Amino acid sequence: MKIETFKLERFQSTWENVVEFNLAESGVHPLSIEEFVGKKEMAKVQKLGLGYSQTNGTPGLRKNIAALYPGIDLDQIQVTTGSTEANFLLMWSLIEEGDEVVFELPNYMQMWGLLRGFGASVKTFCLREEKNWAPDLAELGRAVTKKTKLIILTNPNNPTGAVLSRDEMKEIIRIARKSGAWILADEVYQGAERVGRRTPSFWGRYDKVICVNGISKAYGLAGLRIGWIAGPLGLIKSVWPYHDYTTISPSILSDKLATIALSPANRDKILRRTKDILNTNFPVLETWLKKHPGLFSFVPPKAGAIAFVRYDLAVNSTSLAEKIIREQSVFLAPGDLFEMDRYLRIGFGAEEKSLRRALARVDKVLKADSGHRAGSSSGA
Image (cartoon, rainbow, N blue to C red; front, side, top):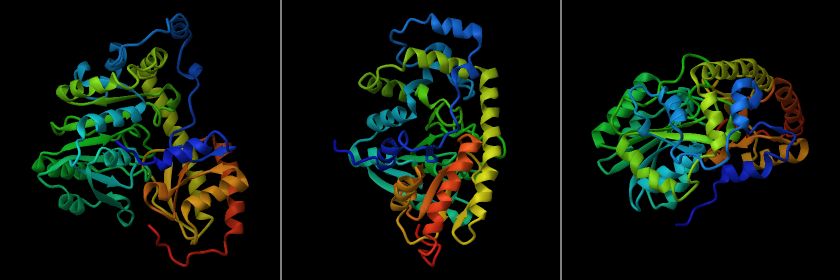
């Protein structure tokens, strides 16, 4: 197997811990341990023996995860080292050379690269900006055939922050059921809704659904590296042996802390914090974007601490991002890393003061480049 460079993650790992301000991050400002672990729980954590944890996740952790999926059994959950490992295990265990897969764009591009590396035949369907990043369901219907093994989507979406309506979910399921295809729904931004209720899961709506999630984005606990797969028992059993060849088990300390974080009382408290951050910070970003009429256009995200912003400058997005890094030490995610040039994914989950300072620095670069307008808002 030969894999292509995962451009987004390579770019992020190069710069995210070097710059002064990281607005490429798609989650909220991280929680500290003391913010969600009480004194009694901390005493137990401190006495925890640091051996191997249960490889599919401890029962306590899987019980708290199961609360998110009505009717699921604990054995239908596989805990992984982050949702990225969950995605890798699924691609490795499911995909054979020549398999037909339909992939949503724009999207987090990890599975895109893995599909191509494992030899899948990849088709795409798109979210349309002119429809507020709603999916082109007619395009999906044309792409899916009797040969389609898997439909992959992210809901809420990364990088746009769009959320599928219930009618759109029903139509995606109808298309999948007609062909017999699996639906793989990456739901890692579920719980980070800026507006509206919690995004409904695809779980329980179709018998060939696989859900991936984790605590990195909506919970602000990326450093624990805890993700999971929820799916039919047979599929989870088929994935588990592949886990034995990778990380074997999550960290026992991460498992314990994630169990505490996902307890019902803590989960609600943490997600309220996330919503407060989003609703405090998005107006800051929105006001800043609107201060540049004609330069930026965007659809306000419904979920996630991310906005996918189109800009009208005659410069490649990676080149623009690198210029902002070099000149102002602010990191933005370039749109061409999502196969969409002339866009920037701007994270607004940082502390408010840091967000304001970072945007002020970006202003300095934009002012210098104001004479390089593309003369058109196209470039997707």
